[in-house]
View 1 (tube, helix red, strand yellow):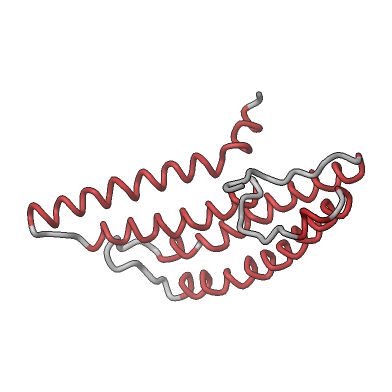
View 2: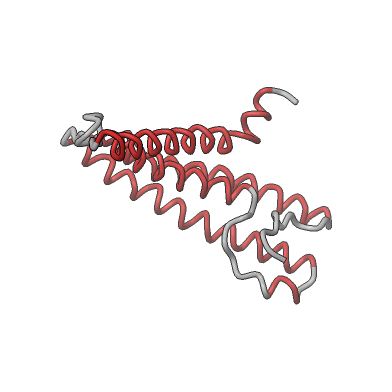
Length: 170
């Protein structure tokens, strides 16, 4: 497996692992500091908050990649394979339009923070870095949606069963 394919297949997983580890370690340190030393810091709270925000947006991209996002799929059980593929393609197209609008409009907030040089209270870092979580998340989602659309169109043309993702519950 080449390195680019390895990164493409695991980009979100690695980012989620790093962010989740940062979140858990920081939270544990802050709980220990608060309980044992009666002292806590604002920077710890900010690290946890912003790690969680990035975790959510990157996790949304991973869910799109694995087709693991929440959906109502009752209709899929009653249609043939070709209709099911068309419904998945339609769903991805609708999601792509929403993601494109959200991606575009999310830069307005980033632009305001950039213009006024907003900084976070505890870390004293530019807020742009934290507000970029939304466009980064939607950008990754659009990338994964393009990959999903390509895969579904190829499968549809080839008469193959469309990728339905992993099932959490049966």
